[in-house]
Image 1 (cartoon, rainbow, N blue to C red):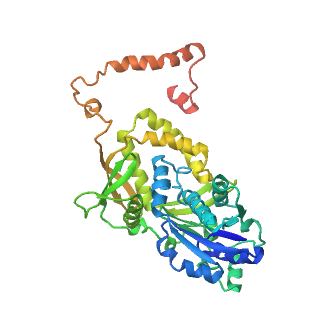
Image 2: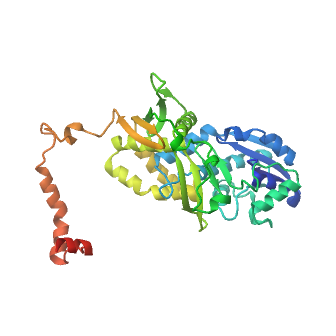
Image 3: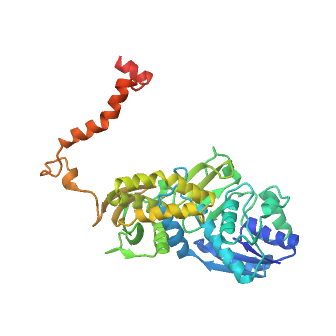
Length: 415
């Protein structure tokens, strides 16, 4: 039997590769998705083959990841529980999709992943398998073997001569891609413990960031960032989605942008602590919202915003390839038709400040909004009738059902 393993070269999947061979007496084909891990991909094929893989595929998915997964999610404004930019969550359906492609090419009977039985990733991988390849057998070693934790895995790796980048002294695990890097487990399992300063990879500590702010400009078309202007540029440079995120990661990283430390609610029911670095994604999300503030209709914005928690849940839980996400994406895509223009941002010691925004399709009308004389663009007397109409139901309630309840503090203040 052939089994295609989603392989990263880390502790879990390195042990899994050898364990599957022993338990299933199978040919294991390693598949590694290049989604922006950069130097972490070095030596992956050699390591996989030394550990026993018959083949190792590394597939470049960077641009597909940015254009077809990250950008639609940013257009939706999706942030999970108000903090998490969904960097790991959004990568899993793409990895699983590409893994299925390799399984079909190799005529494999099964796919395997390294997600634990306590985490969200098992759902993300397996819900994608179910949607795209329900005929394939799924092997999830963390739900089968007798290992109790990562200490057992480290000992197994040492016994089998498998080099791993995790030690008992530095047991937290990390997951990196184009959008972010995440850290969890080990010393981070204590939510009171501050993350060690040397743990961070993509970002400078804000207090050590440059003492001079940096200005950048991002151009949007239909809600998608298409060009970037920095202090060294005479004009904005067109960039692919992948190129945009790479550039913003470097800029945001040196200014300490995008660090998040949170306790989140996993899909499987428990709370977990995660630490994240998302420099480019944080900048892009902020800039996109500013572009929308100028060009998106109020009611469309409020309707889309009411659906952000639902969209974020779909990504977090693993329902990317679901009919409900596709239906919601159609609404999001329609909402982005006129989201175009330029946003200017100031980056300084972990903070993003909006310095300006402009658009040829702006809905902002200075002649109407001005507090100075508006030459008849807005008749302030009209507001009286508008308020009276909106007050009708409040007056009816007060007359027939009593006045609204006041807090004790308010009653005291009002006598």
